[in-house]
Length: 346
Image: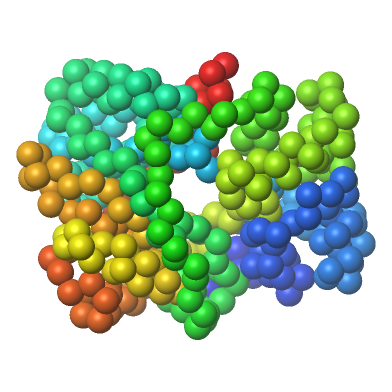
């Protein structure tokens, strides 16, 4: 179990904690966002900005800005291969070459390498998968998201929780949302340019939107209006501090796959997705021709692997009484934001 007496926890005070846990979302789309944060917390604008900058420099906050939604902007899929032990590093290097691969994890399973591909179209995405298959000699398991029940890595970290949201009793909205593999975002040229400008985060300044506008040679009002529209249409999921969960001790993270009867899928997916300790819950296709019989995926993030296993036991006993497998991540092979040059056709 990761210790909360680690350096990250000792380096912050109560105001920092309020920023980390209170502003992972909901930061106003306004010209001076740090003025709003400071006003809420009883500090001035410069102090709020300095604190977020310091948390970023310490690695506690990955970035400040927008969390974009790849499945809405482009065509995204989760894929896996069975990399031979003696070629594992070689296969990982080939997969990680692709800018469209933004996450790649080793997992303790027969399918031992799991990665996400996000491209501007389904055709491009599938070309990349075919190329990876040809270059590595490994069959690719292609598992696009078909239904989103709950996906959000926003949860408090300044606590003694053994698993994500242990201290939260309330459930979450887990209504079934169908996803399209043909998504292209339908972006205007300005929206596309804006997404490229913000994909790595907002500038850490008093006037981040003004700085973005200057970079795009646009009016700040146009940037604010476009950001608001991208939030409304789902291309942007939230705006705030993107927390580094591994740095803050949430490093016992398990993907669990379930063989749910098709006629129970939505009811059980919504039920599981509504549980506070389930951080991700979604439907992906079975691939029986490749020996893959699972159609529901859940993630639980934790500091304590025993506590995470206990919550999975609870899921299996009380909510999803079906065959399942637990795929713990053993190594992060690549982790970046999705690269939007490909998604917006530039």
